[in-house]
Image (cartoon, rainbow, N blue to C red):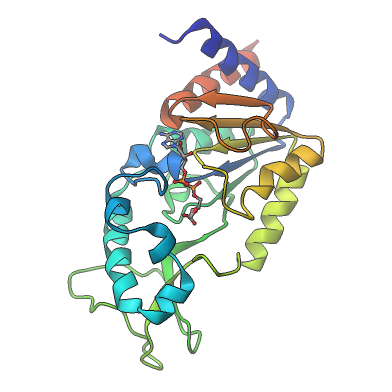
Length: 257
Ligand code: APR
């Protein structure tokens, strides 16, 4: 059973979401996939205890020593391939099915929103599904790791090392993702910001765009973030896989009235 203040917070969030009548966007970060067994980057455990993401997810370091970075990528891909969507991913897919949500902008590269059934997903930081060659641009779509795979994977055309199409530090956000996400953020009457530390640019600018265009921002996180005071109209502290089903239930009650 939740405290009275938390129940009021669920109701307030639900009223805001229902009133936006579908003009709702979501920005997700690593926190939403923690309940699926994928550790978040900052303040982290598991994989990121051994590999500093700031060092390993840097394009200069990848170019300098791709074998070293592929050791981390292989482990990360194994974790991602085992992971299944949790209640939070599924809830967002249900929100969209009920017409309450239009667009998901995700910083995650795990593809779990799509596995949960969400269709309109903008992968702001790319995905692990495809590999591409930094030298000749040859692409290897729907890459799946197996034991027979030589590491690091090499380009069939020119023999250079392949890289997953995820955005490393020092790389640009894919142009179409940036344009689509910015348009969705500006159009949204409400943006839910879920499980992100909100300190990586330009992703953190998405809720700011919503706010500047007159929309409201609702944040769900275990702890306050840099946007909690200045940008978010409401911050609900708690795990996304528990909070989102409560907000969903509160929305359903309002709709049934
Ligand atoms: N529910 C809600 N929030 C959670 C949960 C949970 N179960 N578990 C963790 N969090 C919160 C943490 O409090 C933290 O604020 O999720 C956030 C995770 O933050 P980061 O690890 O920094 O992940 P993210 O914000 O997605 O990182 C942004 O930085 O490393 C780069 O490109 C990478 O996409 C990534 C980007």
